[in-house]
Image (tube, rainbow, N blue to C red):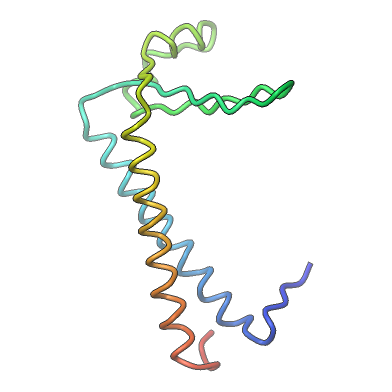
Length: 118
């Protein structure tokens, strides 16, 4: 497959590069933040559809993983489960808004610097 950005391929590549870098930095920041919290929990987000089971299982930090065993995986996860997902959903919405602002700013900067950007 070949990307067609109507002559703006180099600008698109630069925006993609900056986006990857931002997401990596944000991911590391979020991971460190969660690892420094004392709260240990598992969130089980059920996004199943009719006839298609689909669970996302999120662990608050590496410490809670030490309590989970493969043989008793779901039972161990349920024992540590946090059912209130409001804080996670709020943080996710905030992170998405920050990413959108970042991409808008970067796009404007890249486009204002002209076609010589690579």
